[in-house]
Length: 155
Image 1 (cartoon, rainbow, N blue to C red):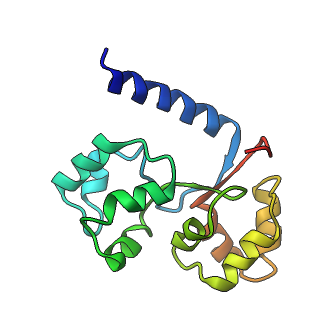
Image 2 (cartoon, rainbow, N blue to C red; image 1 turned 30 degrees about the vertical axis):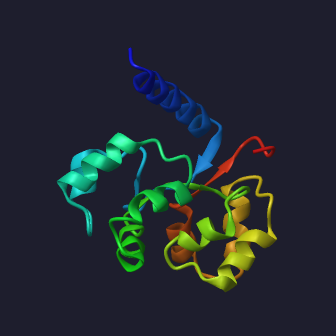
């Protein structure tokens, strides 16, 4: 077994453990960049078979920032923004950087402040209650598909 194969295997185990200990927003069509199939990725805006293959080979992306840095040499900022509506690396609501939160499609400075104001989140229910003060149920559901809340508040 190669070192890369071992690393990928351990990463998948770790990712599964994180998912088991986190509340992840329900997808309304957004694919997780670390688990989406190559064929699904290649069908998305601004993607092609070669870029999808490279993306799959470069996984796992440990943050949205790392994913964005991977795509930046190939796709423009506008192309990445359009792609992130359909393909994203879930961000930890309690640890995401300002930059990562602003990568969530439709999030601007006002919602960034609201995301940060209520940290630490104890679950998606708290996130939902707080965000419903500012936007409707449909928008909260849309935002939830890009985020997760770890069940261990130390992460």
